[in-house]
Length: 492
Ligand code: GLN
Image: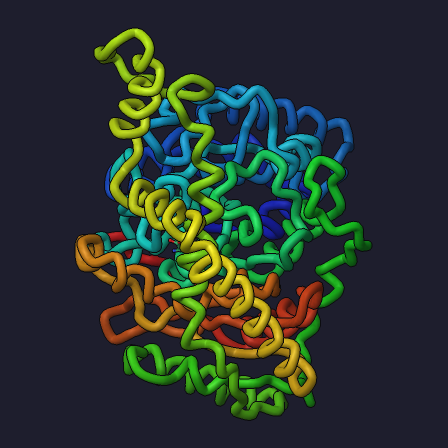
């Protein structure tokens, strides 16, 4: 197998045995980027020279006998809404086209400290708003399994880069499914941790009560390894949980006998693609064979999740995005007119008008409306109340089950352009991933099969807060007994 197609732990083993050098790994990844990036467009920025230089430094440390972390010398791609000191962080928005953060996000600082190689910043839907990576100011990312299909979103660049061999690992962010849905569409593993488990310091805010950073990888072991590094309390994030972080690799046990897994019936109703349904049913059979005790259950508030999410997420977004005024960051309008007194306000307005894409504007308007005097109680407040009921649904289900299993998305990757003019259709593609964010739960998507056309299908597992280990155990067991995660796109 080619070096750029290995998992992080495989690369680590070779580095530790000195059978390969970090520079060769980085070169292999950069070579692949040169070969396929024109077709995929997974990256906004590639740190070619810097990555090679850092790999050389790592090699000399390894030569001197230092191998202190499983992440040392491993190339990783970072979603472009995670701040990287001195490296452009655009959120795929024109308004931040030249923004170079003066600091690293906590996750990035942790990665740098252990010697991971930051290969580049990945493409995404503008400000993480979208499900297809079509809402990027820097062009659409293409799905490596079918170039005319979307990679999912908003972390589409990260998922496509992992699937196409353009990195070894990646980080994404997930507000309503943005790690899991693209991971599902691209046939890779993606995990959204419990809210508060990974620091959000340096993650450009979209909807602060929902946002989480998490891994996108080729197998479950790499997700566990990356979780070990990125989780943990951070005083710089006021919502960061102060809880001990276990060694997640300890959860990688190939045994789920007697495990109780619930299948929420609401996730198999109207709108689900037949092939997705059949693929998930087959995966359920595999888990049953492996000794899991699988039963149907119910999450009655599921029908409200899309409506609730798009009220809460847009409300938070409208206030978070108020800071982009043409003064503090990035782009400022060139034109000035009007009287001197109003020129400043006009400058704010023009900068925002010229730079935000349609979807971002739509969300700012929706969110502002939902929060406005007279509508606040009817929309935002009511949405918060229903959010509590959704949390209660899950608390009830977790009395009977160790975890819940659903499709990650109702359909496989759709075609580029298919939903872009119909926001409601686009929003519905998040229907299975949103609840985990509203309830703050950990959730993972793993590859569980393919459609006849050869598109990957993702299976989602959700567990109670801070039970990431349960998800990793079930996901690992499934993976060890199947081979879907080993297939590679032909990239035609
Ligand atoms: N697709 C969802 C949205 O558009 C989720 C995005 C995300 O998780 N960042 O809001």
